[in-house]
Length: 139
Image (cartoon, rainbow, N blue to C red):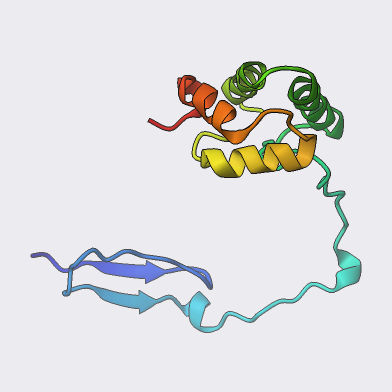
């Protein structure tokens, strides 16, 4: 087995050596002399955080208006439609990358939707319909 040498640059570095017990890690001079720099609170600009929307909406790259439109669309379908309509809307938004619910357990998803939008059908009905839709179910 060949020996490997890793040089570490920066304060925080993660290296996986993978069972090679003959590795030697040599910290760089920058790492040894690094000073912690703190930023005062006055120097940090605040950003508005939107927290009043469906928790599985992917907010990255979306405007507040787009997030509100997605949330309103899901609200309209959840309050007026059947479970199959809601699952179709969820699959549509999942396919567009607007939401991410593939690995969310069905019970947790139902409870979140019910708490947020007040669903008028039970969990079993929602579970049956969701299992038929491969876009929003992990397989």
